[in-house]
Image (cartoon, rainbow, N blue to C red; front, side, top):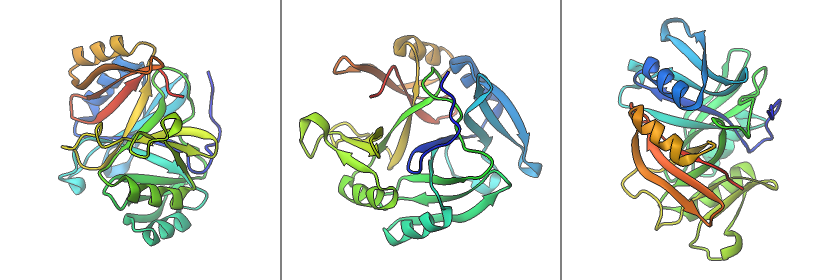
Length: 259
């Protein structure tokens, strides 16, 4: 299994679930992906769950508390940076909103919560003792992420300026088509074209988790109480994906492969 010791700056380095029922979430994702839950006390704020595969961190989860009243269940992406403070300042200069300025998370790292100019929220992570996700390329691991936004041009300028990402239309060369996000030479995600984005949802990042069989995993998720927003669908015969929400409402996608 490909283990990860360090994430390059600009890559997705952590995936975190905020949920209204942590116990139910552990049961759902454990059954769906085979994740093992490792609990870390958070003092009066409860416990922080690290979901593991082969003893390596694949994601995490926590119970949404009263101080976050009104925040719906969600999956949040973290992006690796060399300096949380410098990146936070740069995000504000580029038109982003700093929802929570850079702060230390114990000895593990330094982070901030940022909303891009179009409304999508993400976190940045400056690793110290905790690099983030420790495994990739096997079922149950993060493999891609799509940005759903109505203002692709504004988002492109912001993210290219903040992380140095390159965005390309790929083979189509059509500026209105799917935008592929490259961090260096590595494809990490994309921005959905207008015809494919969910216009009823606010701007957001959608994480994709790798599975061996999209149809079987989607069916299993439904049996476990998930809502299916998009049934298994094929693209160019190279991959198959679906979009769903866990029983508490956090939205994510499943896919067999992403290149």
